[in-house]
Image (cartoon, rainbow over all chains, first blue to last red; front, side, top):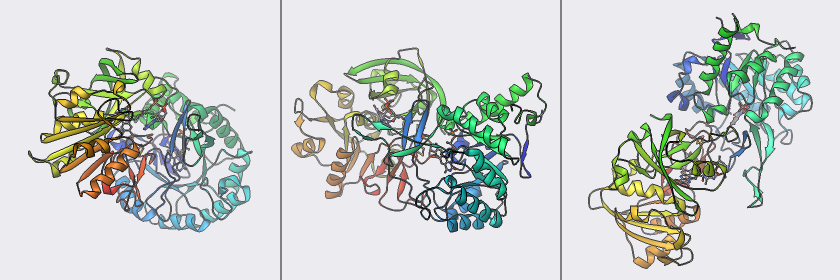
Length: 300
Length: 269
Ligand SMILES: Cc1cc2nc3c(=O)[nH]c(=O)nc-3n(C[C@H](O)[C@H](O)[C@H](O)COP(=O)(O)OP(=O)(O)OC[C@H]3O[C@@H](n4cnc5c(N)ncnc54)[C@H](O)[C@@H]3O)c2cc1C
Ligand SMILES: Cc1cc2nc3c(=O)[nH]c(=O)nc-3n(C[C@H](O)[C@H](O)[C@H](O)COP(=O)(O)O)c2cc1C
Ligand code: FES
């Protein structure tokens, strides 16, 4: 049985990775999960300097999902390279670093700092609030997305995955823009902007008022968007949004995802990633599937 | 080392309106320390996130009849929403997924400060009272406890607390003990201490911080924040720190792993 997949020349031992921000850099979860089993570890978003993130409450549970407004708190690229990448070096898995920034220059700065590390790929989170373009994320504006994809592709030493926001009208267009400007892959979906109100306190539950929704409740939206993106581009698509079980992951793969990521399911079950991997293997055995790639995009 | 496992409910009882006590059989008991908490998972797929609940007592570490059988922990919790209401409907023999032990607990502080004659003041407010029972049991020094309740009709764990030291009570409406807050009870009784431990609502912790700092008494508070992962990975549960934290490199500390217990001057209350 072959579960390995290739994205931009980088081989993953299986198509299951962690979704950025839900797994730290793997350190905390390594108490539960053998990181060597994972297709890839995708780190929490990292910026040029340390970011404080948003005030709390940052977390709200909603029916079948959750809202988060962490605000991309992170220790900055220097600490990240010294501590997190040092830790990941000892793991036999593909390492993908999620990159964030408030300006084009910040993104470029992070990408350049990562150039001489042995990181395998970069995932560019274009959903950060962009101070220059009036708090609209790069990922929500076609021209800005084109510009940043092109600029980062020029600077990056590793393949770049553009992580797409679902908060757009035409996801196929956004995926195509990334492909046309040199992206090696796209990943989606990032969280869907949501809100929860505490009717007893008559106020917002999150200090930030809005938060990004993820979890099982977003899965149908995510599968639809992955399908549309996969139809529009020929670069690999990485699918995520509400994956809890192998069956969920297989939906994304059949919709066209070369690989998938498990996000907030880790919070419900720290073993979720490994269970998804084992479930995919079992599906392949039960259905005589020799190579997982036979399933990729098999539903058209 | 943390573990996630299916625990069996040994007993469940209602202590007073809306407050429940549950004994669980779990291997987490072997590793747990006072002030640590467990993540309790719902059996409903609609509720993804675990509920953080403090360990109230650890069997083998206390004097009560219930606490003699090793391999058990006690959780005492208030029903505030769907998750805790679900737990309250469960009974002996039912299964519950839990992960723990989480957080630092009071122990790191204990090693430094406590000798047999040390005067420790334990302050619990409302649903912050439960972890004080486990702490009182583990301290092994001169323990005084102050517990703040809303009203005399809704008091719980007073018997357990009295096993370990003199208990002072405050109630918001004055129906038992001192009328007012825990600090009012402390001042009324003229209590002093070598070290203070507290857990309770934010305004109470602020009062404790002021009291401790004004008298230069070493003081440890147990904090609360909304959590998602409970293991230090998601950065959902941070509290504001006075100084740049060594792990986060910003003025934030993770309540779930760096806490929930903090030295009072480390955190902004
Ligand atoms: C370290 C720690 C220890 C705790 N120990 C205890 C204890 O010993 N006894 C006890 O009764 N309660 C304790 N709490 C509070 C307890 O976690 C919440 O009351 C509980 O999560 C509420 O869940 P719910 O589904 O009933 O409420 P809902 O309001 O329906 O919960 C919705 C979401 O908000 C979260 N949430 C709601 N209130 C709180 C809160 N006060 N703190 C953190 N998350 C919250 C829930 O976990 C859930 O994700 C503790 C909290 C923390 C952080
Ligand atoms: C707490 C939390 C933090 C996140 N942080 C990031 C991040 O730093 N960068 C990023 O690109 N996506 C981040 N995400 C989005 C996830 O990677 C993922 O796209 C999304 O949660 C959908 O997957 P899920 O439903 O499986 O969680 C975060 C999600 C959560 C829940
Ligand atoms: S709850 Fe995730 S870091 Fe504390």
